[in-house]
Length: 178
Image (tube, rainbow, N blue to C red; front, side, top):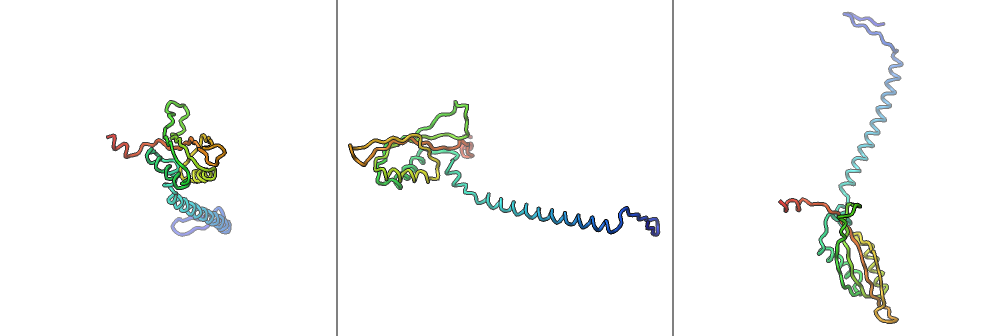
């Protein structure tokens, strides 16, 4: 035991070498914790960077929060004109599947498109490839075809296609209602 003036008493339970050994262990644990902290900060920084660079406009294009039939008709007509310009496009009809009474609410709504294309098989393949590469999701639910002329290479293709959108209420809709 160590006794010093005015009543200070120091009586260590562990000797100095054991205390130094424990300090070394704690310093090592602290360094490991600092390394983990740096890794966590780096991961958080990468996450924030990636979230800020998400292609939200592309996501909105894939599954928009609302849909305008005129815009869909315009976009779809442009897609057909661009990729199947050698084909005759006709009979575009746009409808909506009513699933409001359905118990199976999936969080999205379905818009149907039906139309006809007249042209060669190669033109139709080109159109299908462009539809597949489109940013918007299109699901071909039926496709039928018939020859325009007996023994000809020109066919009339009839399509039924679905596209999807969420049914979110936008702030502008709320403001317009008030």
